Image 1: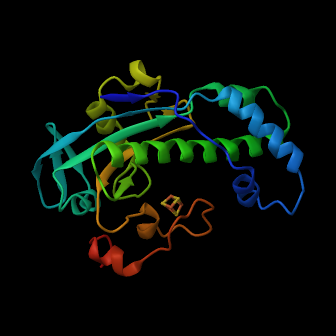
Image 2: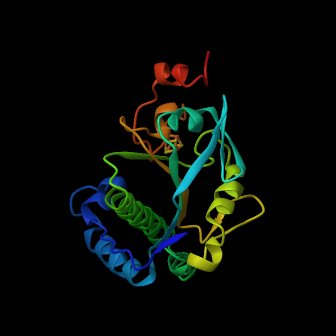
Length: 225
Ligand code: SF4
């Protein structure tokens, strides 16, 4: 397993304000000061590993002896032989900051700032993988983002990476959630066409949506008739 420590993360106030849908100048100072506060509390790190596929089945792949059951993952790995399981975290500091404020608005703003920082840290890992392994384009899937690859698959992801807690301090709860909560996990893979979980997700009104639901693609992946 490889570790990236001290990942440089910049949080763009404009991006935060856009997600918060703040009108011009509203709460500008508060957002700026919370970004500064968050910056002192986060410790962005990543753990990842280069793994090779042992076997491809109809709706699953075997990786390092582990059976990863997902026809979507299987299809995404059609043209490749390797994959990169990963966990990225901001550490526990931001959640502790939430605990130190009783202002719900401040908590909400800090949560959004944390999500922007976490995405920036994952982008750093994305760029690092592309550079290190000479990959032109990569996409990722995350356990639990889609019903077809449920949250329980976190267990296998963590087994592939081995000691994630010892390396970057992230552990799984019995219900497969990650602690610290400002952590993300998944599998990166090389691809020619970008893949987004959201393309296969029918959830409406999701503020995190990155791509439109694509019914034809869902049919291609065999998750609808
Ligand atoms: S639409 Fe929302 S819930 Fe669905 S995969 Fe995208 S971010 Fe996740």
